[in-house]
Length: 360
Image 1 (cartoon, rainbow, N blue to C red):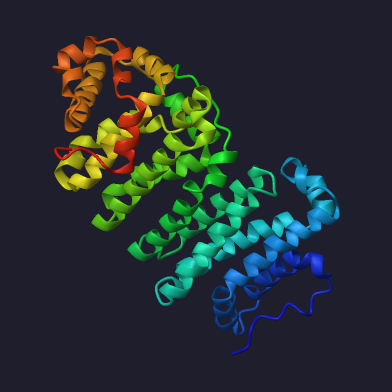
Image 2 (cartoon, rainbow, N blue to C red):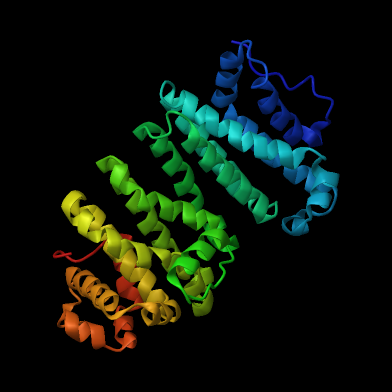
């Protein structure tokens, strides 16, 4: 069949990134033979995205800005990479998401491979572009794929999870994320500010909050992605060498500590034991690394909410054979918060990795 043709572009070799971006956008503006062209783009996307990455690196290196490219302004990017590059890149992320939703049902193997290639492509962009522009592309993809008609199908959700899993569990992503510490003065305001400050982690948390409508398999995949991501945080050298940075990184997911207890009753009725275990160990890992936020959170809870929180904490610790630290819900509710830190690093490492005790 006829493959997409980029040879008619006027750009030189170092502008292949713009040529491919424009090509992908132009194909979707011409309805005639669009399906054939899009099928070719998806089939060879692994090559096209790799060509774009190399073209960007060559262009930045040619201008002697490769080592500082992640701090470039939008004006500098337009001057070096092309005036329409960022807008074309944003459009590409939306159009690609539409293609995933449209063709994922009928060409799953091909789309799954393309979806993986696009996620790796964005992951590599973290190394050469300012992070906010990469975040925009990720957000565009996630928003677009969930607005398509087929987005609630298990197949499309699985592709979305695959896309996010590659990003979240990448050492590149972990190394460039700069979490903001948001104080908890009011729970509602805190959740809103956290969602705004950390859009990507919010995507992951929103997936966990939506698990009641997923299939059993998708629920398990969602919780496994979350647990593995926390395991990566627990073991990444960037965080282990700096406890304050590690605490801030885990603090990005503190909203889970607030929302999870509200769903546990329903989870115990409907979710598998595996999913509940993943959720509980994630709860413990976040709490253990966020004592500063935990103090603030407990200070804004009323007595009933505090007792409910410590009942959940007792259940979680009991599940993983740490019952001796909290002999009862009442004792737990009056215990010093420092007792929580008896869940030492090795324990968190083992539990997040999935090697919990035979009773857990």
